[in-house]
Image (cartoon, rainbow, N blue to C red):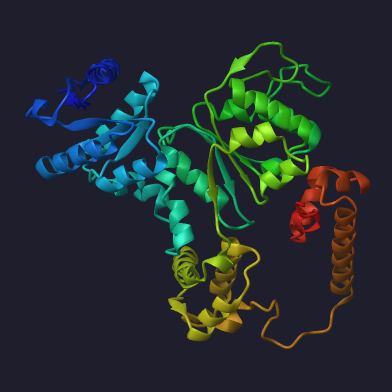
Amino acid sequence: MKWRCPVLSADAGVASCIAEALRADDDIDAPACDSLEALPECIDGVLVVAASGAEQRAREQIDALRGTRPSVVLMVAALGVGAEQIASLFEAGICDFVAWPCTAQELLARVRRSHGARTDGAAPSSSAATSGPLRDFVGSSPRFVQQMSKLPVFAACDAGVLIVGETGTGKEIFAQAVHYLSARAGRPWVAVNCGAIPTELIEDELFGHVRGAYTTAHAARPGLVREAEGGTLFLDDVDCLPLAAQSKLLRFLQEREYRAVGSNAVQHADVRVIAASNLQLSRLVERGQFRQDLFYRLNVLSLELPPLRERCDDIRALALHFTGRFAAQFGRPVTGLTPAALQALATHRWPGNVRELQHTIERAVLLAHGPLLTAADLALGGQDAAAPQPDSFHAAKSRVVRQFERDFIEQLLAQHGGNVTHAAQAAKKNRRAFFELMRKHRIEAQRFRAPAP
């Protein structure tokens, strides 16, 4: 039996065009209707078209449909509708959104996904579409909720997204939510840390190479862009890309074309790119360390995640969430935290943000001696509760080596203004190895970069 999904729009031309695209699927019956009264009596879903400036009318139609047909699956194709208007339509009860004009394939993918939700018995609401990817988001602070509310809207289109926030604020989790809320959810999710790729291998990592491209290229390699075909490529620490690599990335984003290293054949890619940085790229642009045109290309849609110290009201909820998760994961009889432990969490500065809090709770759950985590279990001061024991020879040597490594790395970064590539070259180390030393000692390069004038 065909799935009946009429297209409702006051613009007969647009309705006919969209209905024709949907009829490419033999399992979908999509008549064009210009009013609520023209809708067939028995339908399985409705695609509501909201033209720019007519959002209020679309919302009234959605309200009327919900009142008379509560089981209807609703969608909206917006013509120039802004993000705030789209958010209000989600609040009204639509389960998905696609920007018009779009390809027939994308439109069909959205309708089929709604059809699947309908046949699976899912409730026709925005929460049904977002409960999976957003179920682990914990927090009620205004800034956090504001950024989280943008996720369904950003997922509804294929524009570039730039996520900015300090280390440990959850940039990759937000990027994954955009991917898994989108029509690309069934396609690959590929994440790459740009700061961990040696400069000379960046082009190879992204675009791959053909056999014989260089001496050790004994076999062809597809590259991350090809692996992400049809899905999402997440570029973490995109600020670490050198200018030459930024130029190649810009061309790829503009043309959606690339060449594998050693090949003359141009390949086309259907990939959504989401980038993240723990620095303000606009400041790097002012200092000439990041291409302005690439910044504009990446920063079509943006999320700025607040540090944990600016969402203190969420610390208790996050701590209880992680406690429950790790207690179940490790089979530990831990049920909560003492008031003193919660107070210790609330007064800590959390330079590592949510990631630091998560690891703190994980360690405490593993080492706890009772059903409630205590302040001593958290060990936020970095000291064990027991009296310190004198160092052995190997422990003392390790401590001195660690201090030497930390001082040496910080000195090089200070000399080179926080430029990791130049600091690694001065140390005569591979950039990846130098970056791993920074990660080991929790050294952030931005501490040594001059502030913008």
